[in-house]
Length: 347
Image (cartoon, rainbow, N blue to C red; front, side, top):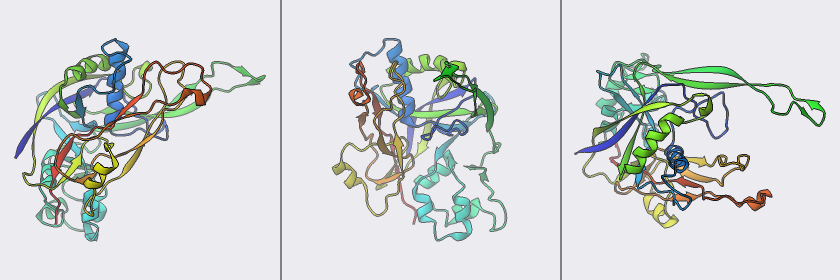
C-alpha cells in the first residue's frame, strides 16, 4: 500500500552545527531531532508575534526529525534516507558473518527502508544482495548509508574549526582571564543535498515558521551565519505494509501515559532513550537549564497501529529555586508527539 507524505527539504546555504547533550562543540550531530526543530519554529513565530505567551506548544501538526537526502543537482531526483530500525540488530545477532556490517548502517534509502518495513530480513536474499561475501565490502553499504544509488559516501562533509572565546571582563577578582580557544565541528552538504522532514496535519503555522526560520538559521552560532537554509515543499510515496502489528516512530516520542506505553511494549519491541532539556534561551535567564525529560529515539519499534501519538511536555523550571526574582512570562514546551508508520517484523 502506497502512502503519500508531505515533506520539506532544507537546502543549507551556510555551514551547520547541531549541538549534542554533552554540549561538545567539537562534535556535531548528523540529525536534528523533531522536538528541537519544533521549538525553533515556535520561537521564530513567537518573536514575530504570530503566537503569543498563551501558546500551548502545539502548532497543529506533527513533524518527523530531520534526516539527510542526497541530490546531485536540481535536475536529479533526491535520494531520501530514513533511520535504521532499532529492531534490526536484535533480529540479526545470530548472523555473525554480516552483523558487523549491519552495525555500520545508520541510514537506509527509501527502497531498502520500504523492504524492511514490509518484513524482509537481512538473513534472506535481501542480505545476500547487501554483502557479496564475508571478505568483501558490502555492495550496497556506502559509509553509513544503505543504498543502491550512486552517491558519494561523504556527501555530508565535516570540518573542525578553531574559535576564540574572548572574556567580556578581562579582569575578574584582579586575575586576568585568558582568551579561550575551542573547536567547533561544522557540517557542509555536497552538491544539492541537505536534510528533510515529514509533516502531518495543518501546516499553516509550520510554513509561516519556516519562512522566518530560514533567515534566522538553526543549530549553534546562528548569530555568525550558521544554519541558514532555503526550503522546498514536496510529496513522497512510501510503500507501507497493510497488515502490520507493529509501528516505528520517525520523531522523538514521549508517551501520553504509563498505561498507553505498557500496551505498546512487548517482547518484540526495541527502543533506546534520549534525554532532552537544554538551556533557557529567554533573556535574562539564559544561564538556567530547563527541566529534563527522557524520550524514545527515532527508529524505536512498538506494538500497535500507526497513528500520531505522544504528548507535549512542560519543561518550565521553578526559577525561585534558582534565586531568580522574576519568573518566565511564558511556558517552555518540548514536543514529544511522533509520526508512526507500520512495520512488519522479519522472521
